[in-house]
Image (tube, rainbow, N blue to C red):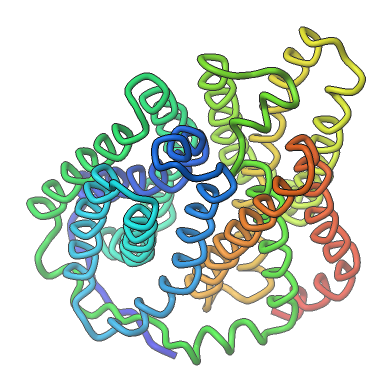
Length: 405
């Protein structure tokens, strides 16, 4: 298996924050589009279901292109790949902002996914290389923290800008953010930082998947992702159907979702260390399932004002529980696969997450063509139930595998 060798000698904390700004831009672009899909559909004269396929296109491209491109360019200097990925990301956002047709916007989403898939894993790799070994955990927390802040702040802000100034402006804003990150990285990232870093091969990845317990755990990530994005892709019509939330209230709901998600990410890591990651994963599955089922029944059982208040509460629980899953699942996968292959299994988990997002968005589109939008709730719950069932079924065997590591 490919070895990583690097000997950082000084602190490069500012560079870590430039890397985090890049992941913030990537996370904002990747998740903000759900809130502005109806406006995109209207402007480009397509259905909301068709516009939802833009989410599927992005997530599916990311899931497969990230490991393939990282492997393909494994011999190329990591710093050069990182900067090229962010440069392409800037250009792709501009292309999305000026797209005059659905087809051109779809092409832009493919390019955005490919560039994001190149940037994020290389940002994590270089972030680790910037600091001594004893500080790598904190360095990774800073770099990946950009994604968490994107969910908490970037997505609701993108929604507000899209509602107030049109769907193209959020892409312009992300292009500006990523341009700033690119300039900061060009100036601040040491020119020799990518030397000595190598990427795992496809064979390395396959061998990790075959390790006991890893494959089934990754399948749980896929089904959780399916459940998450089956509804979230169509969050605008979904929240209006469940609780009558629309307009400026939608921005408030997305902000509640984002802040709760950020808290879930932070709390999950601490609780996982104390009680075990499996328990946190189980809690996340159960909470998301109950939350979805409650959102399905709310419009049938409560008057409009009561439904609106309840929906805001459930949106917060939705954000907290669904995003609390990911740090706990990462800790769990490292324990199951082994620390020596931690970076590979986390990369596989990210691909599994985006694969789930893509399938969920596609199934959500199919549901909308046949059923009322509120039915996205119970369909999403079904997918998470599959994850929960797999978790329960593999409990004893997984603990045995972990004890042998």
